Image (cartoon, rainbow, N blue to C red; front, side):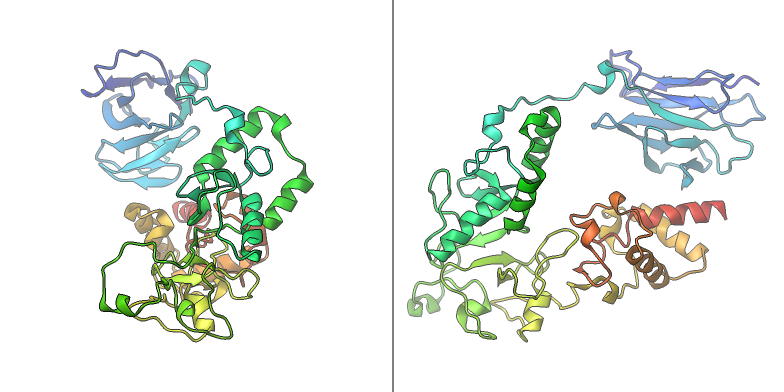
Length: 423
């Protein structure tokens, strides 16, 4: 039997005048022709069985905006296997260069395809290019290309994290308002700018002469204080809020947290104390570097107040919210009975697949997590695959949010898929 793949453009893609071949389905049997894909949206029709010459429209492939992947929809009544994952009728899945696709529920009796994205310059370079003058991407403090760039507000000027952090520290030592090093406007907020950080990294790859020495980068990192968004206020009323009778009795100071109001455990905020906003409850707490009580998740660098206020014996109220102490705790102390939505970026389909894999293996989620933590602690897990900010430094006793440190993540899900599908 000669296995040939034919592409029929959908109605929405038929108007596309481009005949450029951007991807193809390569059959495992080299005797047969590849299925070439030229439109941004194609319905694939071909023989799917090794024992029949009948052709069926079994999937639709839609090119994704990133030009490096596509979305495949199962148009057949059968289950389709994509990299060992079952895709049911009318379900979709993202496929990338090298994805293996079997148009049936089993490897036996069905042909096998490999999805391949063409790598020619006319195909992969169709992306918007933005030209940036390198002089506009330099820190006005050190006059070098941004490193771990932060943006201050409201003026929106950008600096190296280490440079601005040292500027902030010296301003606090002088008990003066924090002014922008570039325009001298009063700074109220400072936070990491991940978009500009990506641009700076692209510039370094394009021009290695802009690279700093390893010692200089290491020194900058030791100065860096900005991990989550910092609220830098003078303590004066500068936020719009509803008027209350208490305003008549106020001294004009806006209290951001409970330690602004009264001394707790020997510490009270000053008028210029830098504050952090909790990412769970929205409450505020003073930024206390080196205090010994964790205020950040080590995996995502976001700030959470539960561990800090609980250690001080402070509970929340209507004016000053405090999140649960369980929000931020050592990774090994977390207890999870169900898969968090954030683990699969709120993709219920993938979450159900993971849950089904665990049940089919006759195991429970806590058992899987415990085994994963043990392997993580013994460095049996490839940390380079994990979307963490400090992967090499994290241990089972590191404070963090369990979904953020990757316990329920593709690092765990992929082995579960493999074990279940091969069982």
